[in-house]
Length: 430
Image (cartoon, rainbow, N blue to C red; front, side, top):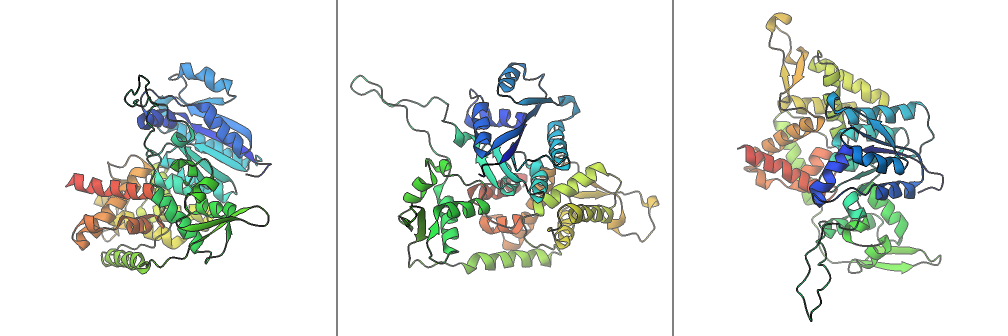
């Protein structure tokens, strides 16, 4: 990180307080000092705020205040998303005031912050997310410049069972099982080095590109103390050396293994053809989740819109705030939501001309959609269901290719797990 980095720390307190015991054990408490140290490693903390209904956490207030964290009280009576909304408002206010912040550390795994992350990055801020593995939304993880898992920052706190006593002395506690599959990190490493066409590449540059491709990558997830140790452990696939400037660099070892790199692309084309035959337009792109979230937000704030008006409103938002998002992608997303029955339309025919188009009737969300992530998941499950029917079974769907179809890229094990979760939801509903 640059020496002059100025950090804004926003903490979604409820999200982390609930997620840590859920994943690490009911007896585990969040070590907020570790979170603060993470922010300090990024740069000087210019702003540090934690958002919650603090009447619910009277015992934790002293600890947070002792760390110099400003407590922002948001009454839970305002709804479960009240703290999220306040964080978004404060972050946007920070931008509008021209506060000289270069980095934002967002402590939350809530996918509802995805649109905020896109906005912050559009404004030139480097966004680092911090959440808990298994509970952090994939869309949020992939939107950040870097994403850190809290449970990999701290030593495992749950008591580990001891091994049987030998010679009258109990042995050390058994090591905890690592939940991250290193194969995804190796695939990512190979992808970066293959793009460099067998040239030597600096380790710092390798890690930079790996983080750009997968913001959740962290060598500590695989029990390596440093990136150097991670690379040294992959000598079966790469050469590592010190150059004349005593900098670590690496390149791939030549291999005779054949790879069918065209197969995934051919499969993706097949999936797109299936959807096109069903009149569902789709161009894989990484902005699709953010577009869906904006449809949800706009409809919640302006409930009397027709679908055409809603689409136009979403397009106007991105044209003003994120012009790099293509209008084609927004139009296609509107069609996807329409064809997957995510909307209900006003049935009062007396309100319209006899020949009015369905898209020109007032629209609302279906009752099963109460959050922006619900809308995305509902649409995605329906798209996967259509593919499964065309292929003969959802079990024939390639999860990696499905991730590329839905989210514009494939970024490792957690994205596969999310697609698997969607497919399992289809099986459970049968």
